[in-house]
Image (cartoon, rainbow, N blue to C red; front, side):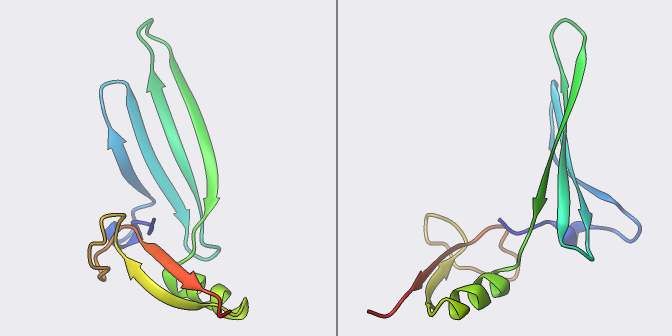
Length: 102
């Protein structure tokens, strides 16, 4: 997964990832610490609403590569998804394979 911070217009603090009849989800980011929070708002059939949040820290593929390198591994391949689509600057996810020499 690659965070959607490129979609931020100047001054925007959140990116919606789902808007539906009974659920709204949005992510907020702290760009200086690379931490974020996923906010989930659920509307239930009885009219009540609940809120839940989960915190995360995101890292870029280059940081994954550096950690793998420090562990003695090298990048074997990277694709944008499990189907093997080409990884590009516009990819919203990545599947990366590192290999440690025998």
